[in-house]
Image (cartoon, rainbow, N blue to C red; front, side):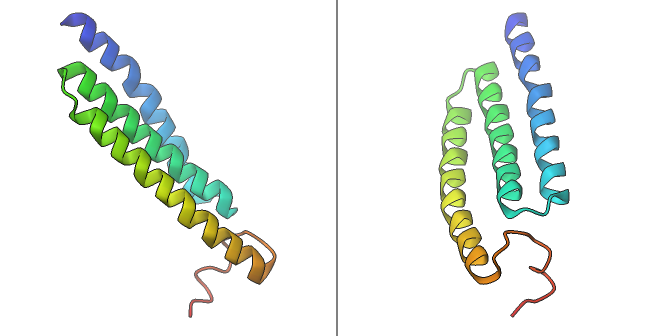
Length: 104
């Protein structure tokens, strides 16, 4: 049982660092591609924690939840790329500077 706790603790700090770096990148970067990549990093950190929880308690629920997170991430990538392409066609720049100021 003690080995399972040590294995679980090995994944918490990297997942927290991955989530924190994704959160900081999503808040402060201006390029839309980088912002969506940072959101994907946060989703991967949540999936890593879900898998480590399920490995510690020997349940498959965390693995199923991680698979759901990856499916949501794939859908988010498809929508995000469509938004970025449309933004680039209209303004010729993929930056977030004018997104909130000129809402229609």
